[in-house]
Length: 346
Image (cartoon, rainbow, N blue to C red; front, side, top):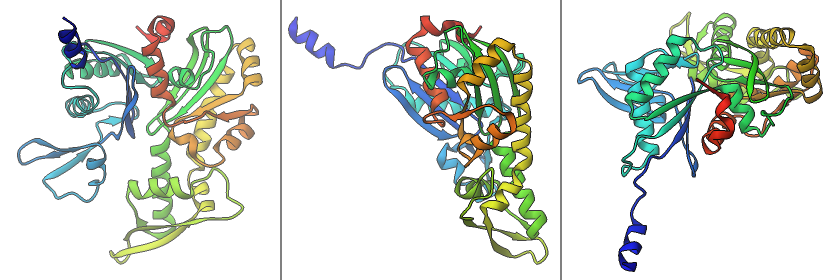
């Protein structure tokens, strides 16, 4: 009997492996219960149109963007934080879940998926349908700012107001959280992607050069700033000269990038202002005392915290690990399900 028990102990656990997923416009992250973050991949999928098969998913697909032959089409099935192509999203999610989960699983996992605050019933149904089709047993949704607050370690279940601003790739979500629930929120489809588009438009108007979205994203990451820097760094960008039709390179300075993204930054500040104005005086008092918490990839833009603080008049803090705080919060809700059940969308 001891030998049998010893052998059984070496076998994989035949049970569901519950997971949390941050299904983002730019990246998809998966948190596996008991293990933490096990996957962080770009939300891209490449399809071979000749045989209608999946050619690549994640980073392998992203690096093909703008470079693939005509029979390989690159897609981003998540737009503005929600599914815009259900079939491709299911293929992508199934691939990611397959990478994250053991092949020995026999029970369907419980899945918590992070979604924008402004998600519609139709968009919600698409997310749930995609997860169920990919093998999930029970699907729960959680608003991204709530997940970010939990991931940042804020005491969201106390009778105290916290404001979280999650600036992702497709959406900016602003929420006031108190007593384990969202008291007030707003979601707008202006975030990292809009900044990239603004940089593309700036280069086109100023230099008559067409650059790609990924090139603009790299510029934003390397020298992007909400304000001109004291030491004005530059970064080379390459594109097609609209006049001569040949490749051309120019160097963009951080001050130029700051100028290019002013409109998206202004819109984000206005969303925050609107949510604050629609919040009770008691919760406003808490927010003024505690500050506004920034999370998401867009919060990594240099001096964006100072920009928002100066425009709103409330202290602004960037949370630790803003790129992973949302999925970590969803993972914590998974690990302590009874405690955070109230925070889930039913």
